[in-house]
Image (cartoon, rainbow, N blue to C red; front, side):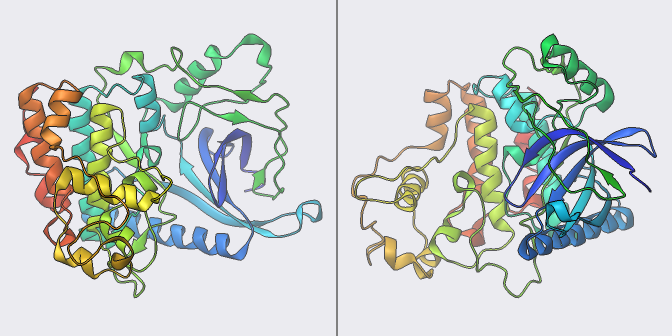
Amino acid sequence: MQQRYKVQCKLGYGFFSTVWLAKDISLGHFVAVKIAKPEPAFVKTALDEINLLKRVQQKQQEQGGPAYMVTLLDHFSHEADERHGGRNHMVLVFELLGPSLLTLMKQYRFHGLPVKWVQRITHQLLEALDFLHRQCGIVHTDLKPENILITVPDPAAYIQRMLIMMDDDTNFSNASSVSASSCSTALTTVDEPFSPKLDLNLVVDTVESYCPEQKCPLDDWQELDVQIRVIDLGNACRLDDKELGRHLIQTRQYRSPEVILGVDWDQTADLWSLGCLIYEMITGTFLFDPQAGPDFSKDDDHLAGMIELLRVVPRNLMQGRYSRDFFNLKKELHRVKTLKQRRLRDVLHDTYMLPAEQADGWSSMLLRMLEMDQNKRSSALSLLSHPWLSRPL
């Protein structure tokens, strides 16, 4: 296993890790290598993610679950040399995938994806969530476009196409710029610790920010049988965790009302995020993008937007740990006094010009995910039978 993974370039970074494109010298193909920061909390997060990924793969093998979760190929710990502090890093090796859902939306200039794609991706995401929730007992907690990747038939060919599109003077040698999560990558000098299994000595001496507008090789995907992979279980939780429902989860725009108000959450929080995500795929814009004002916070604005669209504040939301910080006894917001009610169907039809039939179909489905009362929110399994998903377009 000596120097099995030859790192090519940096793909991206997150709160507790960096991701690199690497060549598996043993098998001769490219992989995505995720290296956790060495602080104890980050090492623990990486170990938790490994355990959850192993659980997912075990359940897939036992029960034939859907192939819409990212595959963990390898994992190990390596120790940095003294130049880099001599601390241990957890390393996770994943299959190399194509661009993220966010990249696809950028390719369409945030004007919405083709409706057939949205139908197909929605169906796959519901299958993935149903499998995670019912078979694996896991809540993802951070569903968003960046955490959904598109598979490509031939990752090596995709890499080559990306290289061809680069300017000739970038001088990348053999390093590729394809991203495991996006077509946009930052190539920087590699400054990571060395280990016998992981060769990180390649130096890429050109910094290039590649943001594809016309160039991303997705133009011929209209007829492609699009398939997705859900990634990043770094923030996921098991349903049998005693601390489930108590801490802050979800990226702001996809955060459910119970999380904001301190009501104990469960797997239905993922369905709220999915509803926001589907709306974004259809329209190219956030369903909720709260902003703070002089007299109110982002949370105030977020809750106001939810009430404007969904019109109700169910009783259980008034019993959260923070509910009194936002509402009076009449279920009125303390700091946002003027609300402009709108119907989801009308927004889709009047603002985004969806045909009436599509606006009716999508709003019917989305409202089952965007139920303010989490106890009434539809499950992934029940939504898989919604007639709109199988309706020919």
